[in-house]
Image (cartoon, rainbow over all chains, first blue to last red; front, side, top):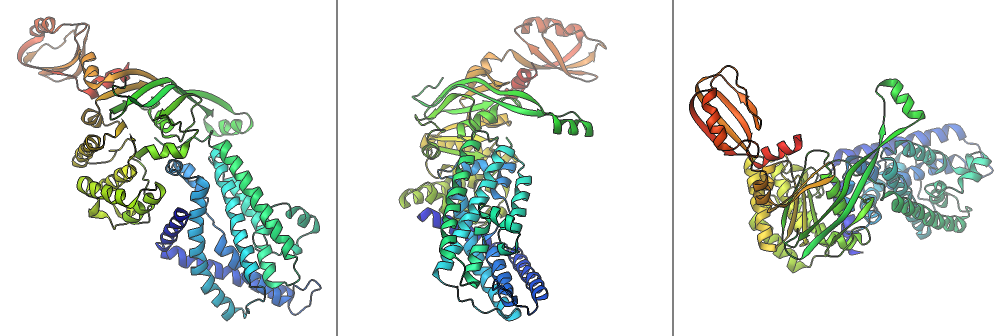
Length: 258
Length: 329
């Protein structure tokens, strides 16, 4: 465990090395917040909705879903990139597992993002969008948020190790990004999707990424205990699939370069 | 071979790759979308060798001979189709973590250090990864400072190091956990003459001080001549020679170079069998002579017939020349 935290600490330090990347990603997150809050304000106006998701709730939803997404998600396929360049050989030479390396690395980046992005983004949300601290900001929310992080890492691991077979796994990466956009709740709450899509989505890990923790924050009547259980199931399944692909793929991996 | 008790044991190793064949042009690309043709390339064919503790072995061959494939399999990062590998009795594919503790690997073309962190931070992380105790870590850092002078750039981020500094840091990093075996894959690529010489001295020093077994692949045959006592030559995935470097030089020393300086040279010279013309000038020729076919005394009898001789200079072929002859055949 000490190694895990030391690795995470070094990853945190590495994130500090690039200031421009930090400012640009912060600006991006602010831009997304502005876009989605503006859309929901224009669409919903002052109308009341029977499901309790009126203008105020949806502006809150847009702000917190963006906040959660920007602190958890990564736009880079680190394993895939290292397979393409052959640098994966360095990771495989270490006496630790690849999942351990990627998880420890991601925990460091995640902690960096929480501290460096969440605070300025919450301040911006409070100042520009008049968003108040939601009542659902409590320990169960943080548990759900942590589980979301683990699910995201599990999906990322599946994407990464698929490059052991494919080398160029961009189409799968693209499909995953589209699925996240549609089903994770990062843009639209799952409730707003057609019923058939909702029924399908709950059998994928995506709604448990951003939809569940965001709904926990803004909607007191959300069946949270049930969702938390599904988050745990999603973790077991994603890591199980990732480990299976890794075990099969490692035998077929061709390391690039001499 | 393996003069001492065997540390590395490689037995009947085979590896082939399935490579997609595409016809040239747009039509070829479209055809490949519908029906893919694959070609099987046998990169390594039944390679076996043993290496004893403390040996320094040069593993050479032309591009595509199967060197890197063997090194990757020895590193435990590429699975063989068949055959076995073990280092001190540990199989890399059954017990990867234990195997990694016994092995230090240095690739000349990629670094195992963390690009954005200072050298000191990378070493601190490696200390935890390999569970090195504080005392041993301090001793090792002191040793590397004396030999590799890593203290000169200890606090600099890796991305800011010169190539020579990066190679020194990488060598120290690969030895930090006291591995029994050090695999070096093109370690001096891109280094200048001085840095190359220094690197070779360091490897010899480490082998001398710690009895670390070294397996080295390099296209710079100066590395092999300076470092290795034993040579394994492979081509087309098979071992062509496995023995001492001096034995190799003796075996192939029938190849020698003869430079003849003429006062006046015949316009057309018919060289006998066993003699190949390398270079020719108005008054000078450089020949390669195979003394298994043509003895020196016969050559010396022939030379005056080719012109008015001013000077003759003979030298045995270098390792590079011998290998290039073998590669060509």
